[in-house]
Image (tube, rainbow, N blue to C red):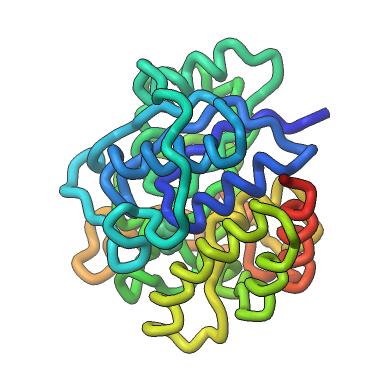
Length: 309
Ligand code: RIB
Ligand code: CA
């Protein structure tokens, strides 16, 4: 039985690869795509989502979400993803229009009309998901789990204490982490180990499929920021981790933990405070992913790209 999912994303190069991976997986059924502001403005992330789905030959509904966080001004990441939010490869113009519904409404309609519980896969700020959960509390019981990219047990990538997705909207993240819905957290602890090296990029490019070439070209651009600013020896492929866990959870090492979000800190705003040593003895609301079989992850991506045209 396929896992029905809603992708809530801010494409964004790694979001785009997460969409491609989810689309290629026989285990997943993308019921809807919702977009959020983050890597770029929500107009740009929506256009990018439509372009990626057009490239894949799909017309899965795409609904535009919130243009800014619940209480704060928007921060974007053009230094990582470029002015379009998906600089680098040439993408087709969309073959279809975005939904007339707001992202929160499409989430509600999708969940309401599903006979199976839905998994939400957020790979951007959590504003849409927080609004959905607070606007439709009666639909929470129809949500199986939330497999998200965000946060970190240790450190941050946008400040020393915060990962970008959580920092964009800490209050929204707090609502989601306190929702009682099981959360699988692909934070920087695991995504900084999900490194795509140059040799992996060339493997995708030589896969002989348009999708393999597209992913290689997305990674060509994505690598620039990471090669210039970090010495990881590759690009951390953040968002596809949240999808890969649904497809092959055995690739990951995880631990049930309690986590909460810092919404007041001057230096620590947006920190995911993960109680790894269980000192608080609080309810364990997240499955923290903290290690990955990197080779297996690359093999998974390559195998899925080879299945696409
Ligand atoms: O911190 C990495 C996250 O921020 C990824 O989701 C990336 O796409 C950006 O949204
Ligand atoms: Ca993202």
